[in-house]
Image 1 (cartoon, helix red, strand yellow):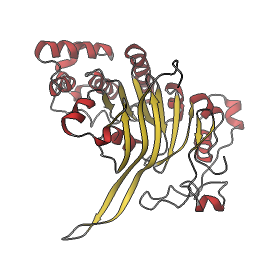
Image 2 (cartoon, rainbow, N blue to C red):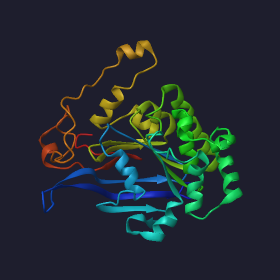
Image 3 (cartoon, helix red, strand yellow):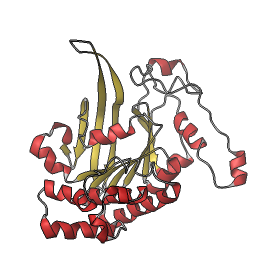
Image 4 (cartoon, rainbow, N blue to C red):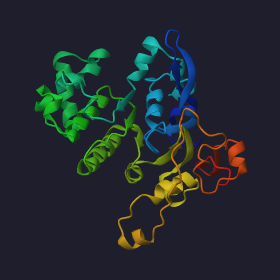
Length: 328
């Protein structure tokens, strides 16, 4: 790594998260597992935004929660500032959590309706003994201003706010402990289209101002293109392609990425008319019983015999462009 290259803040190595399926009336026993995340590896540099995209149920949110150890990994490592979170517990992990925060998908379910906005935002300050009393109140007011809300709103309750305002409160809570990494778990998917751009612009402004690093989870490829430096494409628990933003959108190599991009509307009537949609056959296989070899082979238009027999290696085909496909 050259001296001009930003340092790696987060490194995920061979991360696996399986949820056991238990059956039985008296004695419960495991009869299977949901392969939510299955051996993925990637890194995020300090100050960058990595977009993580894919269909619903492909394991994006589970990846984000497992990185933060909200779900403990089945196996694999998560290195944050070269310290393995997967081996930490108790007080040691609690101290590390100050540096990593999450913005949740649903602004209606992620805020406690019985707490005021001030109490919600100041709760992390209290838990980590950072500030209390007037100091905490002043900090809350600064955070509300930072996310574009009136500081006088701190005595109000979540039900008094719109969805976009609630998500801004969620952003303020995530910023309370001055973290270095924020995992944005589809932070705009529950919002009106007119509000989505405002929240994304806010996140970009905060990143420039505070030097934040984002893992931005979404299924809206056009929005990910706008905010991300690099993009990882996920399918059925694995990453199938990872590249710099412009490279991925102009030169997709994996057939699944090509199919996803073919569905993104183009704001040009002539180009839109010439665009060829790639319609994938069948449904996404069950994560309890994923296909052998390549996960995507059951829906792939170019699948061959080798795709059934061998798992494709996640390899670097050009500088910074990784793909898991035998025929790429």
